[in-house]
Image 1 (cartoon, rainbow over the protein chains, first blue to last red):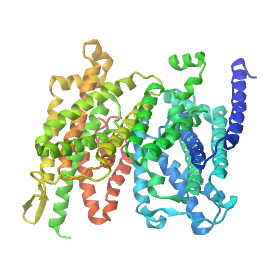
Image 2 (cartoon, rainbow over the protein chains, first blue to last red):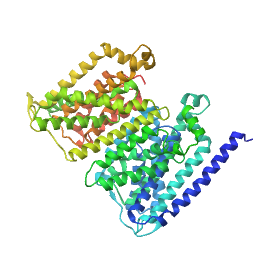
Image 3 (cartoon, chains in turn cyan, brown):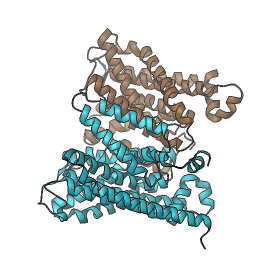
Image 4 (cartoon, chains in turn blue, cyan):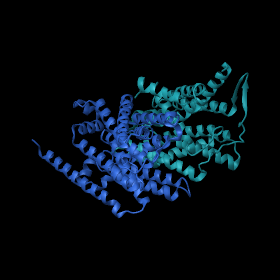
Length: 333
Length: 291
């Protein structure tokens, strides 16, 4: 038995999937219209962050736990895959799942003490643990400490995830990553877990009284979110060819992973992609325009943009696309 | 390692801890008052340090004499941040907590960028201050005078903060913290109280910045590390507790100094992190917190 509301929900979900396939096709065709390595590189980064931020969104958006330590999972994924590739010769296609597994496990480990906290307390705990990891990473000789790891070119091949003309193949690598993250979020939205997580986010007491076990729900969200972030980290390492503690574990990276979802619409299907499409080009272009001549303006633009968007669009850029009825539910619900 | 050296390091750690405590007090005051975490706290410290450096360079006024000036400057900045940014976030009903986090993060990034633009990324320091380079020797124990002055002033700040809680304004602050809707009914202006709370919190950071500028290098992201320590101190002391911030600051300063004796200096913060993990595991609400 599916009631009227249920049928409406089903058709909405089917519509979203249909829309998703169209956007995927458009993004796949994008390189046909965009030439030049710089612009294409910009799109590759935007796609990566769309995926990373969707991974963050699973925990931060759907489950409502604002983590500011996701660089930890990114870094673990990036380092695991890079180390397996450079030292043991294991293909990054396998390495990224090893990295994802380790990231997911560490997200569980972090979650065990941290999920006894909520709100700001939780956010601060993730910041402190993330910075602790950064400190350890830059002092750990086994992973080359602060010098980082350079990934040598092993020859153009998909199993190496290395290409002489690096940008175009990575457009599709990152597109697949972002699309899979989107699909995971889509599945979660319709699943029992998704309902549990949103219940935990909206009202912990009510969720508990309805029989949702809070702590395991948060842990499950953290594990999936962490693992998905780790895979993104591994792809980044392969794309850039170099990682060090500053590029893989820094607090600013944790913020950058969260921001597209925050700017686009936290806990929504399209928020991270929309946010990344706006934020990553603005951030990268302001670095390119102002970075060398007048260092600092790029950060000012970036910081001001965050403030303005957070204040003016607390429900995210997706709210521009909401129908009026939906908007009223958000305002008064 | 001689006992005198250990004692010297420990006293140095306690003095530094007092400074950490002042930074943490500013953070915990704002948090306790209105449940908002200021993620731009480190940037405010950095701003105060540059202000001190700039005033010293252009007028020659000694950092210690600048204390009231920079404190007033930061008080104004704090009020302005509340009026311009925080008051707006309080009106947001959807995702309010998230907006507060990212609005103050955005402010922090903006201020760091501004400092980079105006002062460049190079390290600056104040060399020719009244206390600069002088030391006090007590037998085998030698301590830098700027650090001692910083400890004394920090203690005075805490005396002032404790006294403040017994004044009329302190009671209004306490009442607003308890229930701001009820105090609005008896004619207390919430925005005024919150604004002054932000002013005092920022002024505390301002004083810490002046003291620190007297003996520490200044750079656009000097605040990051101190903010991190302040978060740990606030978590250890208990969110909202001024006394907790003082004790936690001392514990952290001492731990950091003693850790540096036994491990590589670049790892000296590991002791602080271990304390934080212990708090997280065994007493999430901190020593004096309510949670």
